[in-house]
Image (cartoon, rainbow, N blue to C red):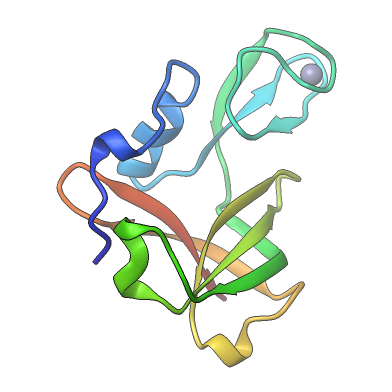
Length: 133
Ligand SMILES: [Zn+2]
């Protein structure tokens, strides 16, 4: 199990709600009230229309693999878990997010469907991973 602590997560004012959602096993994204697009990573202004009217919404947690790579050498919190797969997930809501992809490695491929799973690293830290559907 990764030796990752809460202080290793970059939790700021904008991303606090995202991490609270993950802790509660919900994948929350900001949605712009003005142009109705989803936004990731969290921020205070919509990157599409510059509105500051953003509302957190629970998402489906479903998506597909946009790209991926096998990690053979990882920084200390994850070095005992190599090799593992990291990829860019395109969520149904249209945003892309980098995450770990779990599942039979030979079956991992671009455009395969994935859904979010919540990996509890320790009491304080839960991370959103994606597994093959
Ligand atoms: Zn907008």
